Length: 300
Length: 262
Image (spheres, rainbow over the protein chains, first blue to last red):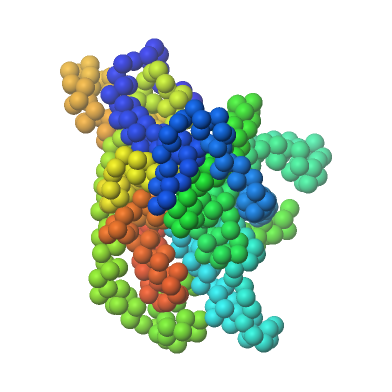
């Protein structure tokens, strides 16, 4: 976990770490602070910010919270609720689909094939999310392959509207996030001490009991990491809902994007962005508390 | 027991089919003769030929390569130095640095994009390729730091001590001993940065100004207008590039083969 031997603090570290501190400080932390401040400001006439003449009066009037108040309007609450719901469903489906895959690759598959199988998971992990989402747009659209197959099979006489609904968004999300669940699960299953499984079997536990009482508890850190890695990006998702959901399935990510690119209401967009960030950070704090208790961190 | 293994294998095969079939279909139809894209009419390179003579697309490819190269160099140097600091020394703010490096990976891209474009506006920086490079450096330093840090953890420090004992200067030791040993990690990190950079859509869409359109932005606007075989062709080229880079990075990250199999 911690640094190599040598002990004691060393000044030699600073020239190495300062450039990163500077870049991330100026171009990451500072922008986040600016965004936070702006979420309390008011929009000006041309998409800029309205100057505040009397800061004290502005604060006292409570107007600085207007965007956060607006985000509690039922229209937006519904969007947040939908985002959370979609992210939860995506996470559950990914977990159920991924666990057997990770189990097979880590434990059942012949060791000489393991690298190949792992490579097959890693490739979609790193390849363009945009293009992988487009692939589904290509398949599901009205003149697409899915409709042609359905019609050829005689299941429908006219093309169905397969795109632009919650289902197509869910397919896109699961498809996009699946590798992010398989990899951490694999990492923890691979570390699983197999003699424990054998011991459990030798003591007469049926396979199902061994799985429930040994395998799952032992791989809980991988499950937690997978949940974080899938849930967090799903929550801030914007490509999938934009391409596969059209205008009907707006998620929190689209709301932020829309305020910046189209509606030109940066303060409101910033407020929503911060609510999103707060939700993510809360989740991560929970995860951090969990890993500290387990003393094991699969995530990073 | 055996039946369970067979079921697991079938499930895994189906999941891999689910992961790869859409990509395969997309690639296949980039070679389709007709632009009525759901029917297979015959094999052609027509769409690729069209791409290569499309000045607009070539311009965005050029932009992507410039941004990718610049971001890779800067992020790799910074990330490697940061990894060395964390892997070697105890210093004030070590824990904070670790958290700081996780944040760009963890905070939703859309928030980072919004924050950066707002910041650039406030700071009076005009959106251009430079702002895109800055954004890409911000979200990729962490990847390099993590990959190189992993490489450092299996590092035998006595080699460096030997070099120093034999009278090598610290700089010499770094370039002749340390760097060659961690080089696979550094190169793997660099390849990952380049891949993430040429693939990025969300953050880039916020910080790219007029004339700084990168390939993913171009693809996005193309497929928003309508699905055409050209979109498939350009997607295929981008996919092929990233897959090659990733496989290479994977190889480099693998630990050297152990002498005895356990």
